[in-house]
Amino acid sequence: MLKKIIGVMIVLFLFTGCVNYSDGDPADLEPTMVALHEDPLTFGEFTILINFIGIYGDSTNYADVSFTWTNQAGDGVKKFISMSQMDVYQGEKMLDEKTNAFDVNNQDMSMIFFDNSENEEVNVILTYELKSTEELRIVFTPLNELAEDPQEVEFDIKKN
Image (cartoon, rainbow, N blue to C red; front, side, top):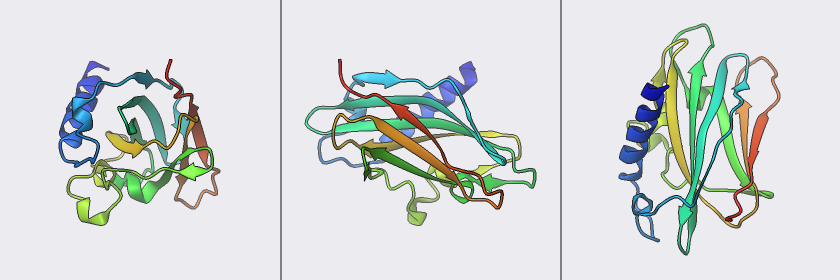
């Protein structure tokens, strides 16, 4: 568990240093709230465990979504981007991922393109610009032939 926490912290530090934000560098901003989700989302070929949701910012608010995915496909190395679609919403509005992690031109730096061996884990941290204080909803849709339904988690992000 300590190894996973240290890994997430290192990846968060490295990842936030590679992004240019118009509202300043989020690495300089302290999170105002961190939400946790204990229950994993289990699919036929992979499992998602939400590590944390960090909310921070001044005039513009951001959310860091951290999760670990386990490759359980049973047929070798996989990439997250080939296993699942991931969408983040506030209300009906889909949020934009601000680090361009889903851009194929960033595949050498983006954690969603990292190779994940069978039964291994990869930590992923993605940053989204928030549009309001509405609940944050994260939807994972498997991209396999098992005809599985999407699964989602919701987080109340209103500041106290």
